[in-house]
Image 1 (cartoon, one colour):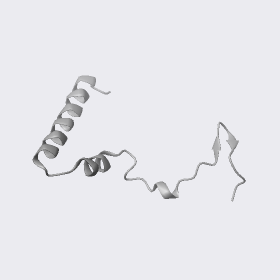
Image 2 (tube, one colour):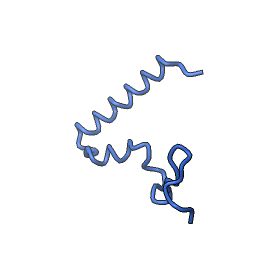
Image 3 (cartoon, rainbow, N blue to C red):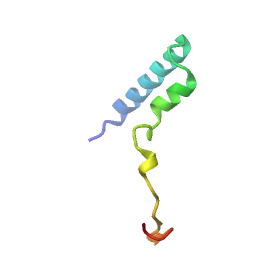
Image 4 (cartoon, helix red, strand yellow):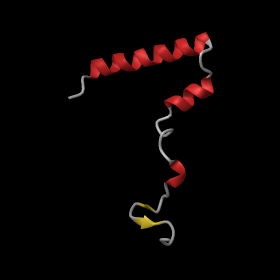
Length: 61
């Protein structure tokens, strides 16, 4: 079960660490955004959208 209050604290601590790293010059804004990008670890170039709402966008390869 998710403890919402604990999660709020974790997120704020993460934001505070990010702000401190930016302020100290340890990392620049663009690098921090890449680091925090949810999709950064996924091989996006390998993904392909084949349908939307169950309807194909193109013929299957």
